[in-house]
Length: 166
Image 1: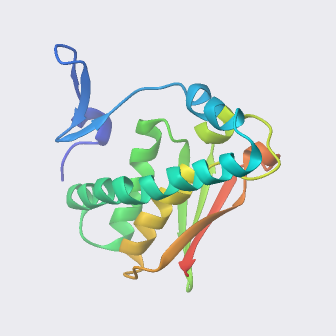
Image 2: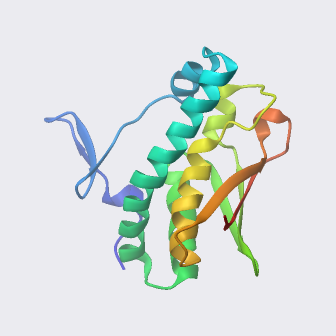
């Protein structure tokens, strides 16, 4: 088993990059990212958040496959690796639960909810995208979709997601 995510990061100042093997990361304040969404009208915001989720499904799926290689082949090991990696990425504290029909995730201190501020609709589409990618691997189904069912930006104590077959 390889070292934890944060210990694998290569802060390559000479080239201005942060790498985990070949995957590049950036450090960015969540208010800067989520402030972009706040400035959009309702329809454009929804489309942009959905596009972010779709991008994370694709790129997060690549990361999840790498995490699987670092944490073991079984589903519980992958969920554990993703949950322990999330705080290292600044994505809050993740807690997965597996049920008969899918996966549930509770996230405390979501940077997306905090960065967005008060909202009338859930805003943690990036996390939903990652949970979709992971859910497709864990549930071994390509048509899994995750959705946020409670969001701290909407006043919930934590953000909650469920991943189920579509």
